[in-house]
Picture 1: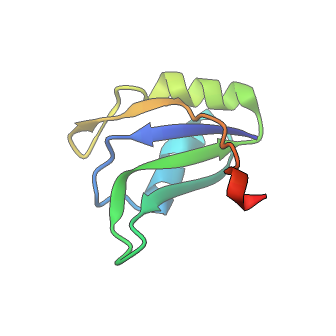
Picture 2 (picture 1 turned 60 degrees about the vertical axis):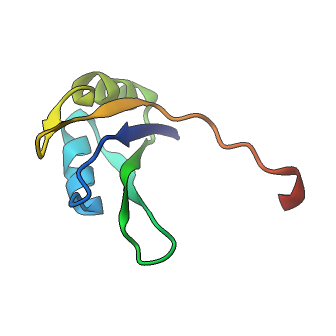
Length: 88
């Protein structure tokens, strides 16, 4: 699974709209907006997961700088999550 970060999103963008942005580059496994724990408001960024790394690279190239709701997207490969020592 290859995850990409999509930043500078309008706070109005939904998970479904983020998914639709991802579809032209391949079949996304998931697309989720990061949300505040309290209230569920958008944090202005999200993640798209692709099963095929080539599709993720195409999405990075195709979405970086694209204007959505008047805002230029910032898109790059997401860093791998490392478990915290206390969560083992």
